[in-house]
Length: 185
Image 1 (tube, rainbow, N blue to C red):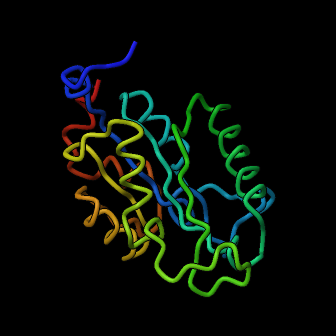
Image 2: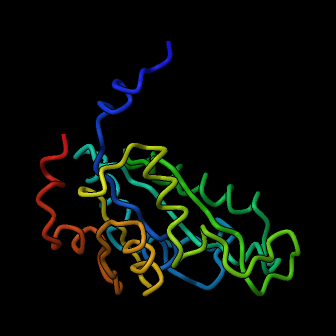
């Protein structure tokens, strides 16, 4: 049955934390495109589980210029994400969705050569798509990134951004003043 316009407007909005991947969820070894090079940041799996338990969506939005540069392909990125999901599942946690941008201005793979793709952070395309796909409430959304381009993408998408400079990701999230997080359910 199709939704009427009024039913669509009444669709509940969800809280979410949108993570950059490399340098936030996993250690950034430079172009991590293989599960064998996956090292989780301290507290990352615990942070994701805490969000899951609170009813907060856990989304990943990641630039992956390694695809554009020919270091690995999209299938390798998918395998890495599946490995991440497996590690998380073993701890009772999950990522709700992954959004990737393989495009880059200096691509060596012509299919991914694009000077200013709308998904490539600091552009907000991945974030805006996630917000639409998951009915995310912009007032209860946070992007956690490790680069100024992540924070700029959050600003352009109209959501809060937090700069993660390393350490324990779970402790970092708990230290933020996000009263909506504990009241999400």
